[in-house]
Image (cartoon, rainbow, N blue to C red; front, side, top):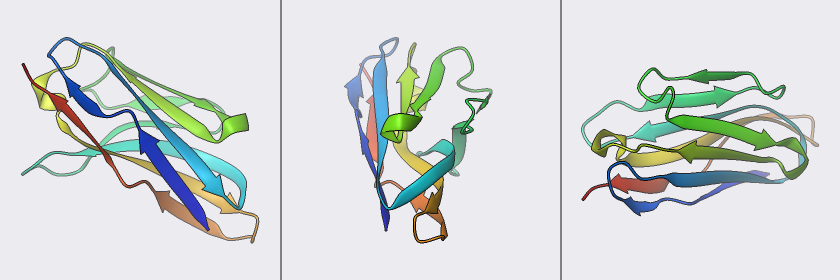
Length: 120
């Protein structure tokens, strides 16, 4: 069993910054890709950014230059630094991880989501 726990959401004014984290717990052998998605009311779920186990990243065009993903493999944790936030960044942010468990099972793990609200 693997759990992802997200933290760091909240309310911020336009132009402000927030940092999210996603920590994985459980019977983990290795975590491959870690991905942040977001879901805004009335809109399709959007892939925000992906980071491979080696640190390669892919950002959505809408966040390039403003968001930065990083990870600490020793801590099984990914981080998302969000700068220059805009009202359109308002969404529930979900962490997803591609995990190979100690039980020799490949798992697609999801966090519970954390709400980010950008508003004055």
